[in-house]
Image 1 (cartoon, rainbow, N blue to C red):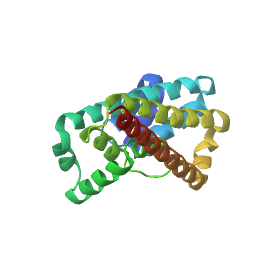
Image 2: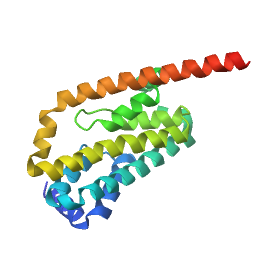
Image 3: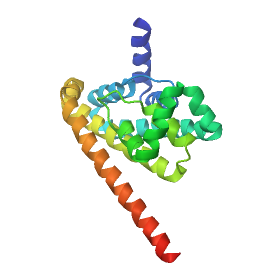
Image 4: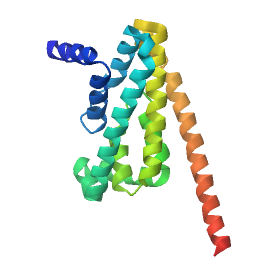
Length: 202
């Protein structure tokens, strides 16, 4: 516990570079459950004038980590997915991803208050052939909204921000579910439009 406290103190002392590194490590496969979120809130509460820079630093580090893990899975293919997760979970992930795709990955990366298998969906994105461009854009959007919102909360509410975030977890989770459904329906509609256009042209 003392070691963790010292590590957090060191990161806070390093400011933007320290936050970037921690966000990168967390998203690249070494999980620090809600560690980045807590650090953003703490740093923004301590220095509200630079809250936007903390959000930007964490977003850049996290996206870099996500892209690293994505390409690691892409290089290893389905064999990487089989090694990373138990066989029964791998089958469920493939089936789930085949149905919901990048919309599911976006929501797991976006939501800060509900423990979701973020790494599993990032690995699935890489291993199951999601195009890199849409994946990167989805990660940037999700992390920018998540970390930007947390930085704003930290700057406005100070030490009470984390309490507020946890107290409103159900509402945020419901909003994430609604967003997921909207994204899913939008992607399905787009997919149907592309297929119908291809048939007309054919």
